[in-house]
Amino acid sequence: MPNPKPSSNSLSSTLILLTILSISSIVSSKSTIEPCSNSDSCNAMLGYTLYTELKVSEVASLFGIDPISLLTANAIDISYPDVENHILPSQLFLKIPISCSCVDGIRKSVSTHYKTRPSDSLSSIADSIYGGLLSADQLREANSISDPSALDGENLVVPLPCTCFNNTDNSLPAIYLSYVVQPVDALPGIAARYQTTVTDLMNVNAMGSTAIFPGDILSVPISACASNFPSAASDYGLIVPNGSYAISASHCVQCSCVPGSRNLYCMPASLAVSCSSMQCPGSNLMLGNSTIQQSSAGCNVTSCNYDGYVNGTIMTTLSVSLRPRCPGPQQFPAVTPPPIRATQESIYAPASAPAPSLHAGGTTLPGSTGAVLPPLGSFPASGPAMSTAGSFSSGSSLVNPFAVSQNTVAFFVLLVCLVACHGF
Image (tube, rainbow, N blue to C red; front, side, top):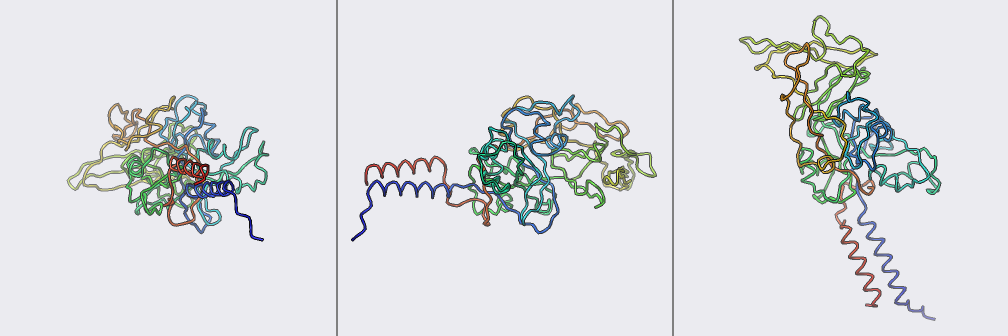
């Protein structure tokens, strides 16, 4: 007996289902993968937008980092009264410094843990609380969750995307930001915002074209100042992105990186209370101080430099050099008070970050030659990072060449439904 002919309704339903499933696979987000073969960790950053108002300490706790490192990475003044309890506004974009590990042959951050609440779901944790930096499936897999409905009180590992690429970009110091692509983004705008090139972004992310889609996670190189501390130092490998600073040596030393510079400059931190000696051996110069003497042969510069934190001791080195010209006043990145509102600049940043004014309103550092403390400036340029979660790409290309916009998907599904319903 011949098989009965399938009904028009059955064919229509099957067609619609297959179409939706195929489109779902087409528009899946992508993330850059960095293969690795050792257990060493490195420094990286995440681009993150606050899903609600949170205290500085709460944001730091969300990612398992020191509140001071969060503030300094965003050039926020750490001497502001009770700064760790300052409430940051919803939708504010922040750069989150993280340790990037090598796990199962790829780079990722696994130091973040999240304790679930009754209202949580895997999707809300991934998409909202962590701003699309991971997917619900990645959360489920990392924690071997068999029943996603039973999450109350669970302590989840949150696998976050990160890359390091030896903390270099075109052989120059760099730190990599994992950036969630927004609907308003285009690759040239992201490149301009972070002072890199479209070609560099494409090379770093192994992209076959300039096409990007909401939810993709790009690895964005940011120029940085790298340290050269001995391997015995607890802050070995310290690298500071342009326009920010970092606190080291048990909050005793502050190291900064001026926009456009590659030279790390370290000095006593404003939080320094009980610290080991910061005087250079065989000299009366203190850490960060220098003397300048003009001569017929050039300019003799003697400076006291930071050389790492070893076994609770602040290491200093006296540097003597002859330069063709005498250096000008020491420059610093602009710092700001903790923001109280998410401005247009702090959500969707301008195309590029102007270099801060380094001399107007500055204050001379005591005991140094020409060093200037910067006046308060504008919040560092950055971009938004709130989107649907992306999934890791296992291929050489970051972006799915067949991806289509959400509006196109909606139109196509509607068209299929109309065709099916009218029996064409």
